[in-house]
Length: 455
Image (cartoon, rainbow, N blue to C red; front, side, top):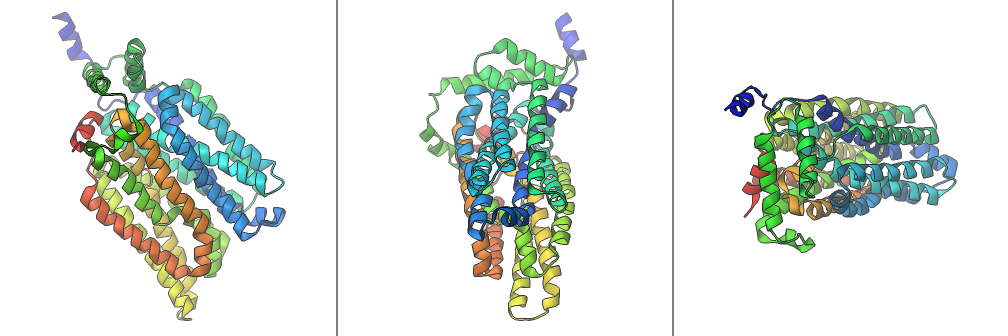
């Protein structure tokens, strides 16, 4: 009787944001700032590196693409690393690779050091792409999960924007130092975060699981219902056979796998990563002032990413994703049309402005929804295949990103207009894909979502 009366006075944990939850989430997603610095670095440092080290267009294309190439290998390792070492220790290892990468770039005397440094950054980024989304999804309540998960896109945008700005005024070595410092700060912050309760109960640490969940939800929070849901989910998983790599390809997981792979793949093939990597080349080709173009692009990305976070848990994943893909398609189409006018010597004076507007629309659209694939991956994939399927998902779209980032400069030399019309087509295809296949996950528990996706 007394226990029942006490429970009536215990606060519900659905909407409570505790200091530990806030700190743990912020520290986890702050790794995205370093990733943003790495994304923007290839555009901001292009002029300085090519001049100081004498790199050709092909050599610099290799340097730029090494980030996404390394991400493929980080993606392969990310799931198993997170499952074996735990979310927290895996983030420590991720930071070590980030620091190695930035250090190699800082002290680079030739192309090989640059490539190896960029490769190490990419490996860390591949781990981060999976690990951050999964960790945040596992520690946050369902009604605020999307906003917290999507907050990483704001920090990516800040990293890109800051790199674009500073690239106009400081040397490329100093720019890399900023990235290294951010890694050290993130590593320090990891000492103050909570390990994922879901991972703790998965490895049989019941006492630590309860303590961790209670600290995240607050001393007076009633965690009984949530703890039961998590335990039931883990118990079901333990009753299944041990996960094998090929198990994710079973028919019952087909829809989940198609959604989590297809969504980021089509977003990536929309070309936004290539545009971010080589924005300065696009503006130069269009006759736009490079400094003005990169500054304007940097200014718009972070506010739009913040808007995406604000509306994600209000409007839902599907509406934001659809609006983003439509915007990306229109932005690419506008850039392609501007280059067509330039080719035919029609309204050439408008080309710089049209290209700038189109690039800003494309990148703003991408910034609004770039975190959604990670949110969907962390929400939709069942826990026992989340490691292997998550790694495959990240590997697939990072492979596409590598292709885009490597061939982008060569595509521009082939046909600027054709390049952006291709990107517009892929974004349009993404609209159809999302409208037909992607479910709404807003306001649902991970267990409810996983059950609804089984065929």
